[in-house]
Length: 329
Image (cartoon, rainbow, N blue to C red; front, side, top):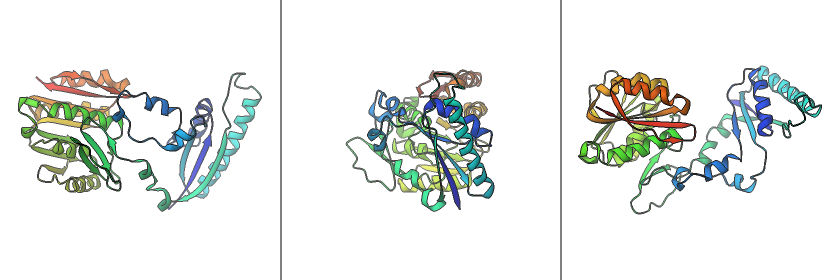
């Protein structure tokens, strides 16, 4: 299958002006590559809080951001692309005529497009998925990259396939850091006796991490059958099949097991929905770790978790995301 890749070079202010224009054509999914984000990444306190920096950002730190859009290669979309180009030319003209005021600076507003083949770009993201130290102990390594482990490191190999979960997203790393922390002394018994349920396990990355940390029994649940298969493959790849089982299930529905830790990297509404069942599936003193929560939803989710009977232990943040660690009273 072929796609049209549309790239728009503009300033941050210009991108803000372009987005409503794109939405008018029904384009809502875009990607913005902004070199200024490098400063935010490099300001992280700990080196393991960022994983891989594209060298091109270091070489061209002052270049304009690029907004990218991908559309199916159809006659209708080719016409849409041409109309977008015309509208952006008009937008540039309006800026030059001071329609948006004397201080408006939209950058070049330069547009380029090309037709790309599915096979040529579908795996291109792999170029940017490099070994990354996610916590003090855990390093996540893609299967196609080599890595020499240092003393004390736990290397987790992963091939996410089409399932969410490479470890580098803030929500996953927040969960993994909390999992490492609470698995070490949950119930005061040590990781060798800790049982974990990973709800919505995706690629299985958190399930495998729990096993590598020494947790005795890990159950991953996932509603998507393709993700279940990918998770099982990653479990086998890391040699933890004796500790980790992956089942196809809708959250915790039909799951008869109890655990010491439940981890759920989901969206905020699902975390709220899950909280009462998580309470039921935890033993006394068990810990519920959840993420996928935007900061603006933090208080709403925390209230729902508390209403389910939990005591909030901590709410760490990373960028625009947060995670919640709560204990069953």
